[in-house]
Amino acid sequence: MSKPHDIDRGSRSLSRKFFPAMSLRNRMALYYTSATAILMAFVFLAIFVTVDRVVYRHFDEELRHEVSETLSQDHIQSHDVCEFDRLKELGLDVARDDRQKEPHRVKKVADIDPEYVQLVDSSGLVVSKTANLAQNVLSFEPSYSGVRFFNTEIGQLTVRQVQVPLVNSRGVIEGYLIVAVPLKSAMIVLRDLKYIVLLSFPVIILILFVLTRLIAGRSILPIEEVISTAETMTQSSLDRRIPLPPHRDELYRLSATINELLDRLQEAFHREKQFTSDASHELRTPLAVVKGTLDVLVRRPRDVAHYENRIRYCLDELNRMARLIDQLLLLARYESGKASSSIVRMELLPLLEMLRARMEPLAIARNISLKIESVSSGKIEADPAMLEMMLENILSNAIKYSREGTTVEISARFDSGQPVCVITDHGIGIPEEKLQLIFERFYRVDESRSSSTGGSGLGLSIVKKLADLQNIVVAVSSRENQGTTFRLTFPQGKN
Image 1: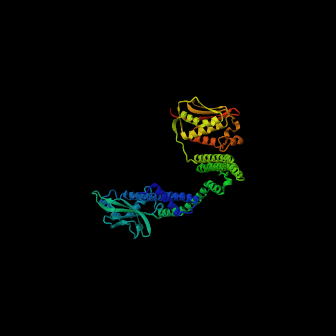
Image 2 (image 1 turned 90 degrees about the horizontal axis):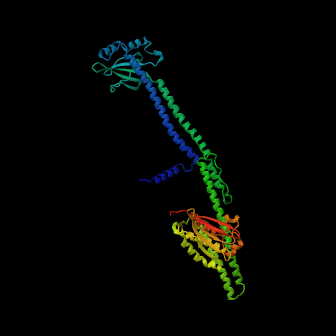
Image 3 (image 1 turned 60 degrees about the vertical axis):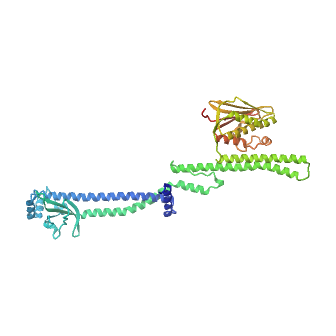
């Protein structure tokens, strides 16, 4: 059994086979015109059949009237054999002459088409007929036992006739009364209607195709704008956008969506361009330092202590480059969506104690103490590895930029029902106008002091990215020469 997507794929292949290079406007016009043509064909056929039935119904009513008028004369009071014999003796022309003498009961002969009347016996032998038949006779169908209407011909003339059985009192058919009227006017009407339909149908379809193609062409103008914009867009013109249509329809949504896509592409391109520029700048400095140091070492022989000192210095710079590359790769993984968070419920205190033990040697080297206070016993929802990296980066910055002899305070508590972790240092602080920029990659509040502390400007960018992945809200407040506070608000989970 064929699957639905196989059928769709087959229909698309057939469409490409029969309409390989047809434009969208032509396809729209063709599909719409084809559907309309089928509908119009059914409508025209229904009109023709309806008119045909109405015309024949009119002639059948006229024939019934003629039969009724003929049988209502004094010549035939009932359908018994004596009246049938009497009608044979008098003849149909006599009956018609009697009818013409009573204008209040029948129409004038000049006002209607001539009728042809014929009387036959049960075997089909013509007993009597009107004089206007001359040498012609009306058709008799012995297989019709009841009243029957049908078309036939008298010479070259097409007529509509009715065949009425004449039954006596014993229920035996003694003969048949046959009445006919010409169909010339009706045939002309039906023929003209058929010609009108057959001639007008292709003309209407052609006009409809042209009009539909024009309307479709105007409707897809935004698509043409999309094509022309895409064809002329390059790296230097990513700021170009598609003009929005005046009506807020599907094409408006398409244009707006593509403009949003271009905005994201432009932002990504600008970000990657800035990233490349910043990364090359950051890597160029340690490379230049290592190269310059080695160049100095090879100029003339030196003592072992000097070589060891310079080599250790070069290793420090290479390690700094390695950390920088690791951080760049980490950011690239998170921004490309290749890494995702694994949120679990966890205790915050053990993680804080482990980080304090790890960072304490660095803090002692700068005569700084780490203090954990106001620890809440509640649990948080976070990715342990990501949260550890975030807190380590924040604590590292707090230690680097704190004054000697001060304390870095770490607290964990509940605030308005939500778990919060606050890290406060008493260092040099950050100017207020630069607080919103510290989470950007490679941004440094002070280039000179960042270089001296070995910072690359990526730590807080990683903190912000990891926080977004875990739905953790990071806020920072700072006052120059008084210190900086980082506040991490975790999502409120089930207790």
